[in-house]
Length: 76
Image (cartoon, rainbow, N blue to C red; front, side, top):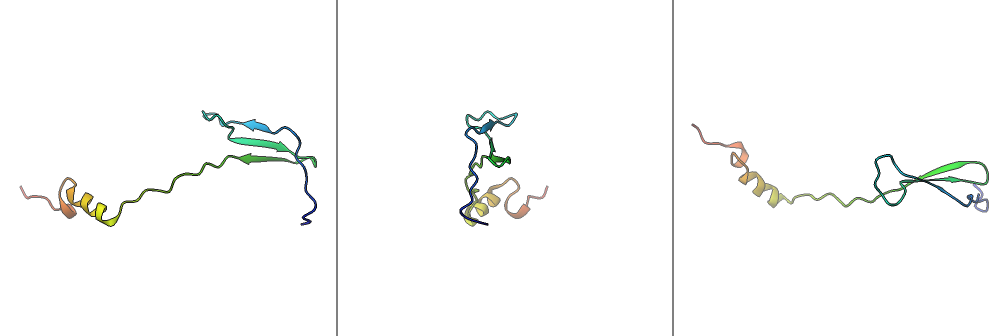
């Protein structure tokens, strides 16, 4: 594609919020361009990395759970 050809947007984007959103900022922006096309830009929220337990913590949790270590339990 020709790098020198760039289509300029119109001046006012249309802000859109999801129905159940309580966000201050819009969840989407709808933008009309001078060539007649309409594009929708969606907000991307970066989530923190998942927290995982180390092997030592997992082993301590397993040993201290109800029923004891590896499912062993006292006979009645």
